[in-house]
Image (cartoon, rainbow, N blue to C red; front, side, top):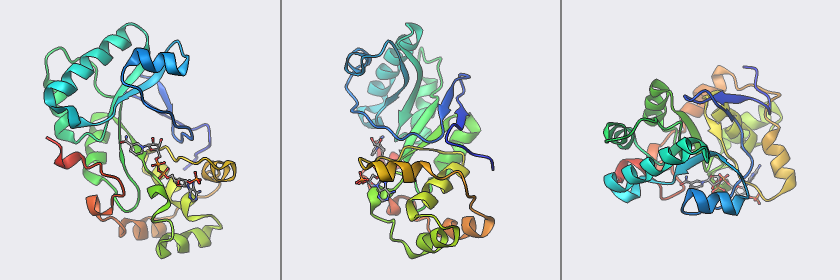
Length: 219
Ligand SMILES: NC(=O)c1ccc[n+]([C@@H]2O[C@H](COP(=O)([O-])OP(=O)(O)OC[C@H]3O[C@@H](n4cnc5c(N)ncnc54)[C@H](OP(=O)(O)O)[C@@H]3O)[C@@H](O)[C@H]2O)c1
């Protein structure tokens, strides 16, 4: 698979999203507040952070985001921590005419999110993995460390490469310049089928999560 730091994935609105994103910013509560805080004319991608607002809250937020797209303030809109049921419900709601371009969910080898990934692929929604490095908590895993040793890479690099090979966008966070470089240096090796088969065995579903976010338990 030929991946580079410049690799992008095509969103369902025709725009391109980087496959590996190394930045992070606070998420204010409205598009206007965000544009002001970011000092930007427009925002490339704006997400509804979670399904917690309930069906009517999600619907209301989405209509506001559709307006922001229409006004040119936002290029692409998406959701985060949404299950397929949340997305289906939203798409059936009155006045909804833009499909989410992205669903950002916790994803890494210990929570492989197979059902949400399959649904999003079928629907043309790009999956973006938050907490891709498990906040560092699982990087000592002996199997991942073994695969890392075999390729002369680090555990973090193996986990990020695995995500990219699943066609999933990764957004690792680091405040350390050396690690930011390390996290970007994942385009000179490929995980082979044996590696992928081993990593497949690490999946614990939601039990493997390190954050509170569980798309399946929110109404
Ligand atoms: N949508 C949501 O609900 C949601 C929820 C959680 C997170 N997020 C987003 O997901 C992104 C990442 O989240 P996160 O920071 O919680 O998790 P993460 O990227 O999995 O982990 C970051 C932690 O890992 C360390 N780290 C980074 N690179 C490393 C490396 N190469 N080797 C070892 N340790 C390394 C960092 O420490 P150093 O800084 O010291 O390198 C930091 O403590 C952020 O943009 C965040 O906003 C979204």
